[in-house]
Amino acid sequence: MSKESRRQFLAGLAGTGLMSLAGCAGLLPGRDGRGPSPPIGEGDQEPGDSFEPPTYTPPEPEPLPAPDVTRTLQATEATISPSGSDTRRTWTYDGQYIGPELRVSEGDVLEVTLQNDLPAVTTTHWHGIPLQNAMDGVPYVTQDPVDQGTPFTYTFRAEPAGTYFYHSHVGLQLDRGLLGPLVVEEADPHVDYDREFTVVFDDYLDQPPEPLSNGGSGMGGGMGGGMGGMMGDVRPPYTGLTANGRLPTNAPTLDVEEGERIRFRFVNAASATEFRTRLAGHRMAISHVDGRPVDPVTVDEFVFGPGERYDAVVKMTNAGAWQLLADPVDGEESPARVDVQYEGQDGPPRLPDWGSGQHLRYGSLHAREEMPVSGSPDRVYDLTLSRAGNSYTWLIDGQAYPNAEPLDVKEGEHVRFRMINHSPVTHPMHLHGHFFRVGDALMDTVRVPGHMGQVSIDFRADNPGNWLFHCHNLYHLESGMARVVRYV
Ligand code: C2O
Ligand code: CU
Image 1 (cartoon, helix red, strand yellow):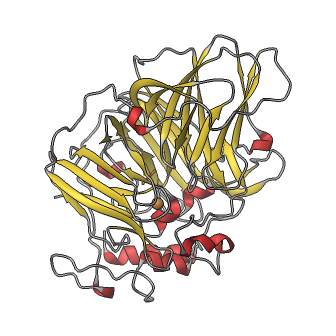
Image 2 (cartoon, helix red, strand yellow):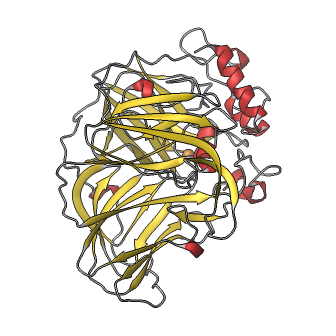
Image 3 (tube, helix red, strand yellow):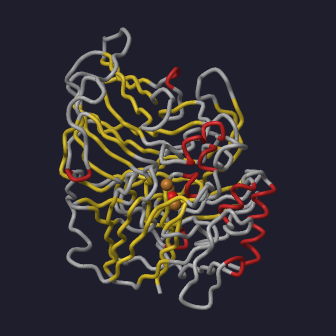
């Protein structure tokens, strides 16, 4: 992929209004003097404009057998109505917000043809699936962005089983609504349940998203006061928070029968919201984290960040009408809501009793699978997470993507990233193409808490290619908080 095509891509984004000048500053730091100076690399790199990010070519994908499941996903503008009354035009998969649930069996070869009918380039990423690099959907790392009017076919083996989602990986398109759940069913689940219910939580904007800046002009500027100091983060002006594409005033209802066990598949598909999640009147047995099975842990509530998925089995033993809520950890919006209604019960659904009882911690998660790594690593990266000076630019170890050095690894190595968060906000860090170990659990996205929070992740470099490692707060990602993990 040439330097020239990357420039055209950036110029193209600017032309479609996907990227403001503030966004450009983030992507091309140093150009206007506000961004960080790119570091001097080991080789011939120089600070300033002469820094040229490397270009990436995915390894040739291995041929797969004929697909078991064939789908088309149309990326298209459509009219949606999360409130049930007001409508608006936005970008969707198949005309729906949330996009259609794709459901396959573990090991199936899935072939999805993305038909791009948007007035912009796009790609689709299969979040969490350790697939072949060329199918990963990252513009300029694994593929050229897909032009308007053009189909692009993604083919991969859907494994391991788990709860995943798919979303656009271009600019801020995810926050327009280009996302949907992807369920890979296991042959033999380790927990018993009678039926399942997928719940996708999202933060919903009724206008096209714009890059955030540090106060003054632009969207979210009025709320930017905290960014200069050690307070909170700027948030886009969300209209509200949705469950399965519906605002709380138009909440979906789940009808249940006493005694049945429901497996919830919770997906945090938000661009900038961590959710505190709780079902009034019930405890939940957390059974999977990022799709990976864990020894069930019974809790009253859990927090999850953008990109994370939790499955929970709930036994319906408390007849009544109850609210399942996802409350924003930093945000003033009303919680996203699902009403859980027992047969024959009406009356207003009751609210949860926030804060009481057992809260999930990463430390109480124990994977039911063998760990891919143990003992001491072959390679360690110390990575600080921080914001650059007074600009809305987010850095991994002092560098803002794409003007950033890749993190090189060799196939077969046990790699450790030791992260420390020098900023006041949580960063949900996501690695493509691999599950990593945190304590005794396996996941693909982990929250690194603010104010010097530290998290180490360990993974086996067992999937050659070039894989994005980034913050799943979309506004942080767009402002530089990414690196490529490059197999050399
Ligand atoms: Cu949900 Cu880079 O991905
Ligand atoms: Cu972040």
